[in-house]
Amino acid sequence: MLVSLGQFVFSTEIAPFHQFQRQRTWKHASNSRVGARDSTQYVGQGEDTIRIEGMIATGEIGTPLSLDILEAMANVGDAHVLVDGTGRIYGAFTVDSLNETHSYFNFLGVALKIEFELTLKVADNEALGATVDGGSQNEKAAPANGKVDNAPMSEAPPYIKTGKTKRAKKGK
Image (cartoon, rainbow, N blue to C red; front, side, top):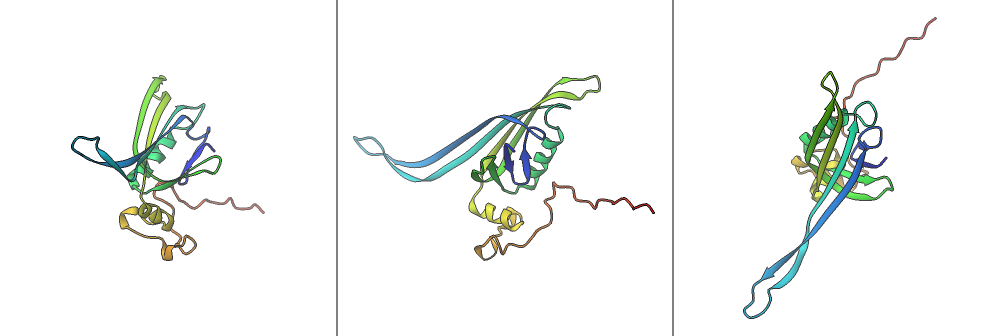
């Protein structure tokens, strides 16, 4: 595992990436003064943006279906916890944008090379609480009693296809 965003795992088999870039900002308010430099005051954290760039080589490395899963996750609008392979937790992030570049097409029109760029933006604590509870951040849900252990179990997210598997009947 390279990185996981919620239940989506970036790996060499699914969606390998070659660049992971993080940009964090902090806010400082300024006040003009006569005859002196502006005074500034720290007012809190700003944006936290992560950009992941990768490439899928159809049939060799990764799968184009992984981009469809990321799109479905973005369409839901929920925040997902981002964790890297060493166990470092970056926080809850929402999908801000997903760019794709398809090239080197075969005779069927299938792109043999797909480059992608995923941009994630940090979510607030309410969004993380909604994700923990299995609700939507749009519902403004908060963790049940403030504890993850008491959070109700939810059904699978809409981007995960659920279906009953058929078992083969044993022969006599």
